[in-house]
Amino acid sequence: MDNQILPSETGAAEPRANSAAYPEEPDVPESFYALALLACPVGMGLMMWFMMRGGKQPAPAANAQPAADAELTVLRAEVDQLRAEQQNRRGDLATPPVRSFGE
Image 1 (cartoon, rainbow, N blue to C red):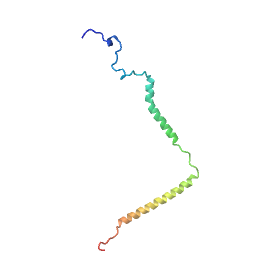
Image 2: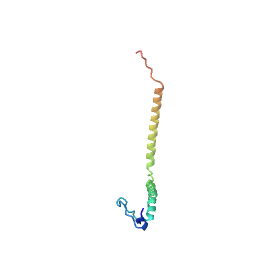
Image 3: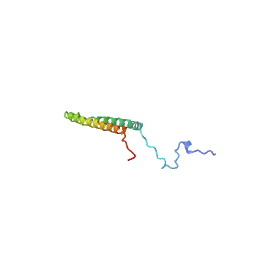
Image 4: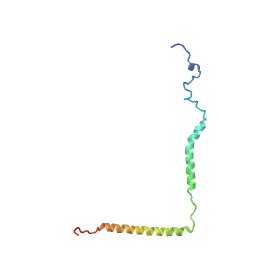
């Protein structure tokens, strides 16, 4: 090897082979990185807070209680009816009908 001075030894910048493939990195302040890291947790916290605020409903009206009691009575009667039907089916399955094969 000859005693040639290379550009890297002189401090001069070496030209890149393909400068379009390697664009210069932009100067980004360090605070931007911190902001980017905090954006997700802060955004999630705000969404949770807004969702909790929106879930509150106004108190029901005083006349809504009798209607709720009437609906509850109807639903209980329907449950009793379904239980009775279910017990009748179990009783029917417990005693199978007698079939005669000779007839």
